[in-house]
Image (tube, rainbow, N blue to C red):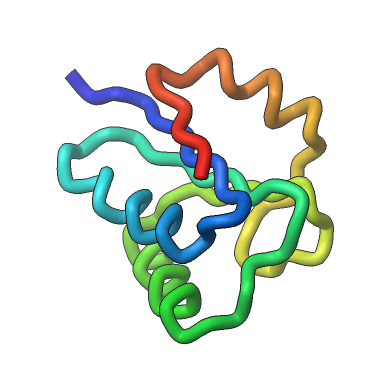
Amino acid sequence: MNRKIAVLVRERQEEALRMSIGLTLMDDVVDIYVLNRKLENTDSIVANLETIKDLELSMYSDYADQNYAEHVSIDQIANAMTDYDHVLPY
């Protein structure tokens, strides 16, 4: 049975993105939510974003100026959390 997993990205951005990619190995649905900030521009994060795009994972952010994520309000994010089997904050 596939699970639906939300990963909330905050302080540990590189680890959260890396872990999100790893969760796809079990064929679970993984959605990524970047909260309250822009992702840092490091080599590791850029590489992870390319992999996330290749895997066609959904990314959302409440921060408006993100070109890699769909902009959603914090209220929309809060409402969406009830649809997940697991919510993993990083």
